[in-house]
Length: 539
Figure 1: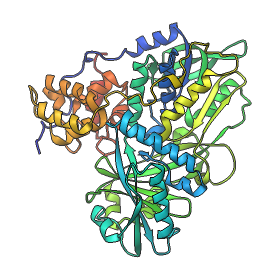
Figure 2: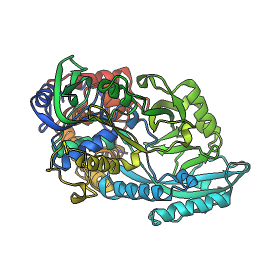
Figure 3: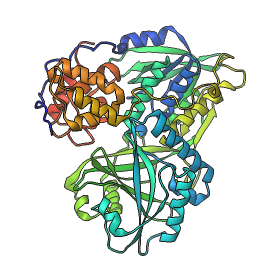
Figure 4: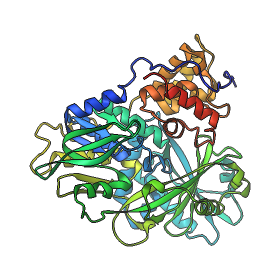
């Protein structure tokens, strides 16, 4: 494999913004302050981002703000799956599974084929397990039928054949393996590309901007007061309608509208563990733990992602994290189907946790419906919470359709209905990732250093055709063609690109969400110092 220059601790170039970079924070704050927007979306998780994207497509003047980074909480703490929801068949939710499959296929094939990829799942059936082989065989067949067999026909496989694809599969007492197809993605990258799509459609966005209060006009919510969390600047945004899409913080903002607002949601914590792989995995494992829960072992970004937990959470959402107890539970549950050598704690590179937003009510969180809840407060602010990654486009379209028919038509008669807009509008960079990687390898090295194969593949599957913009930076400045860390495919040009084109403001924005360096356990002090130096360049 072709090598690249060793990683400089402090890249000496790339400090100045590249051509076509987005407006700076001061300019964006001024832009937000001087206009009245049709819609102010508070919350930069995928639900708020998707709504902003679709609302801007429909002709609305849209602003989007978040107190942290885009996809900085729940939306970057998922299991990284685009899936129909096999377990929903247990409850008879056949229509829901079919709808999920439709959205999964649309995202994977038309909207973002450069950011999503198919993934084969093996569902092991062990002696004494919660489900029998006949039941799971019928289940995966029905599951594949609901996707019109677009990912093959669900079937049963022998343990010996399954172990060829998953060498770390535990075969003791393994009776059979059920096979089905689903999809996978990098949630942070998918969210960022959707932000970019919203901006290209006309939305104005700002991260690290916290709502400190709401603006009212004759009892109606007509905007928000904000504080820039990076420099302390205070400003405000006027809007005809405010959408509260703050996820786990949805009731916090509802209480700004009405101090006596009753809780509308409950939270469930889902933790994950990331490990280095001890062997290649050609399929993922979905192992039943009990009648309702499945634990995943997913090959992802050349690593192994394990999880997830599902337990009620009642603390401050900002404090959520994967505890030692979570890690132990995840490893213990993975051990049902994964060999011990792959579960060595020395292989762990990262652990994380996020919060699922569920409808309020009693009962076990693992059995609660993953549905979206929309409510209107006494001041006219709409609050929306819940849902799942797979249907992020559908949720955005549904919310915008609701906005169009609100009583009194607060957004006017000029909204373009969602039904008249393309249903599979691609995200920026849409391209065949294999073709992009090939081009990067063939065209690389003129005049800069030749690109390594793993870097070309990484760029193609995280940026699509936008990879060529990063390659151009690397060719113009050889220091930016070097790896950020010797053990990762990322190059310094991605840090410059994240700063100038992807709203990265802090080292964590870059290391945790624009790249995979934190998840790989490679966000060293030296790497962080280099990233901070680039972020601190002249803006």
